[in-house]
Amino acid sequence: MSDRTHQIEDADRLDEHGSRIIIEIDGVSVAVLNVNGEYHTIPTVCPHVGGPLGEGALAGQATIDECGEIGYDDTEEVIECPWHTRRFDVTTGENADASCFQIPTFDTWEENGEIYVAL
Ligand code: FES
Image (cartoon, rainbow, N blue to C red; front, side, top):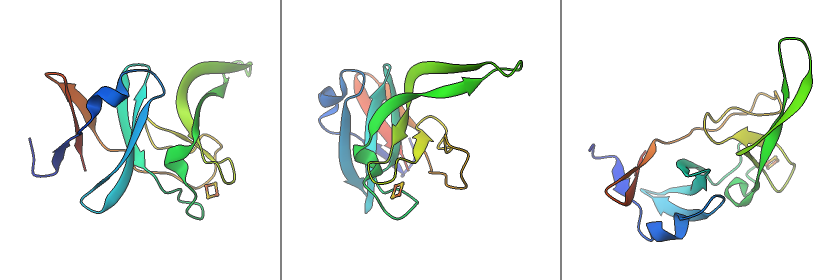
């Protein structure tokens, strides 16, 4: 593990889909989320104008296939900022609404029952 790896305390609070912990690591406020049994870490502050992104609701997202068919992927991997509803994919950090905003994501994994984040 690198110097930038941190073990998450209270990892048992991340035991089900949609659960989250908001913590500060080395002065960086992050939200660690359980999304369908996978762990993801994002900043808690929205890049738009500083809204509480880490407190946003998880949702799925609209899709368009190669034939132009519009659908909906109900895999809740998108977090919506409570202030102006910009949405970000927690797995990639990409904006789900095709705007210029993007967020960083931090590697997060489970090992021997513990959860680690690398900033
Ligand atoms: S502050 Fe998050 S969308 Fe505006």
